[in-house]
Length: 212
Image (cartoon, rainbow, N blue to C red; front, side, top):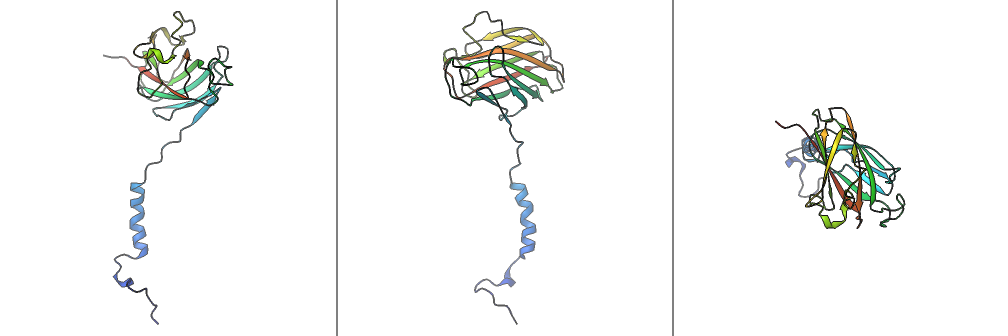
């Protein structure tokens, strides 16, 4: 007995059986499906969160509240000698000069511990603050490496003897006269101040290698 077929859809005219069609289409789906990116880990400490979402490096730890006695400590691993950007967000209410840890108060004592996993020595290391990604943080926006303090005593590094600060047209802090060998960790300490605190800002980190 012949099985009835839907009108206008004769199975004899199909070029592929369902099984053949499935085997043909599945490989194409794998080709056009987007590659799964590595998960981004957001680390929270004090009144802020810290993310490596813009790529090029990996955060391995975060602690502290942001005071001089209990600074925000961010541990990182850089796998190349190219600039990377740390994304910083307020996770608690913003209140200028409020109690650190309870609110985002715009006063952040920082310590960055960076593992050089780039296979190249670093002979300088620069930090740059940005309120808007890829745009300079100008003198009047309130965000800086403690620009009101002309003689800071809290900018130090384990591997570099000296530093320079720029406030116009960029907010930059350059550590120099030193070296970080591959697979070694360097520590950088400084104070970030933001007298008009924002919910999000960025810290660009640029390791420098020997030239010539």
